[in-house]
Image 1 (cartoon, helix red, strand yellow):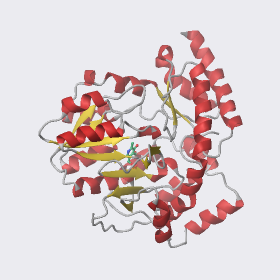
Image 2 (spheres, helix red, strand yellow):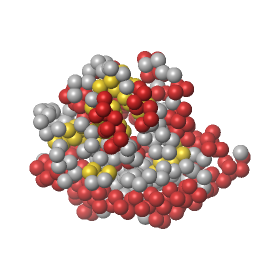
Image 3 (cartoon, rainbow, N blue to C red):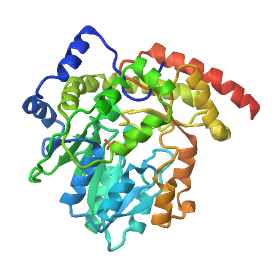
Image 4 (tube, rainbow, N blue to C red):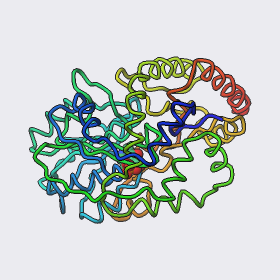
Length: 384
Ligand SMILES: Cc1ncc(COP(=O)(O)O)c(C=O)c1O
């Protein structure tokens, strides 16, 4: 079965590395040396999760009780953080071709209370960060880069995460590490985090990185586990646990080495999907955290049937995000949103499909997924 979230293809060498990750003390010095080339002028702090890094940024930048320009097309895990710090998000619609925030809307929405812009390079698709930086400079706004889906991608000469005043990463989105985040920030920020422990729940998340367990969880886990995990993930700010940090050390270089191959496979996959009528994001510098496409327009209402059909054939696609933050009823009420102002975000949420893309994939895997896609798509197409 093919899955979207990072999977481990186990061999003897990997097994030994993974096994020792549960017992070793992390070699933070050597890891920091390796990461230095990615963020030479910044400080790197490993956090419990990406959202912990975001909260540290808010505190250090003194953004409590302010307005933050924020993408409308993103998940709603940010709501509790807005409430905690009394931040009012000013949502910006998405660009349907790139899923980036609509830069044209930025200037119009700035008010005297606006102190920052949150820029999310979702799915590995970089925003036009230089343009955003010049607007921010003009209005004296802080820029927070959300690289949850974008590790190791260069824009010009620098890696993403170096452009803003600070940035956050979510390690388990692109590596099989169960849990973990990373804060990239100015060197003079003093941060002292209490280390967290690798909980039984983290162990279950870790098992989910193995196809056999992922299959069982998908089949029998039902709707219970996401709810439990969601609740638990809102706990307080902390440092990364040792096991996840060891796993990150094990996997990140290999991921980086495979990036070129991954991008080539993704582009082949995109081309084939485009021929079938899916809309793709034709952007250079995409690191393809997921292979995200839009359902063909005329089959927009059939997206969920299509996903169910593919699942029966062993391809587990996701719809991230079929419910972006602006569709959360509490968000709508709290910030008095007029959904008519976000037509593209809503269209993307109705058409989005994330196909599996793993570092270990070969061309034959993509060809197999394309053949299965045709088999599921054609009958739906005939019904329209
Ligand atoms: C785009 C984006 N940014 C940030 C986060 C937060 O990352 P984490 O789950 O590690 O807290 C997420 C995760 O849901 C995300 O999808």
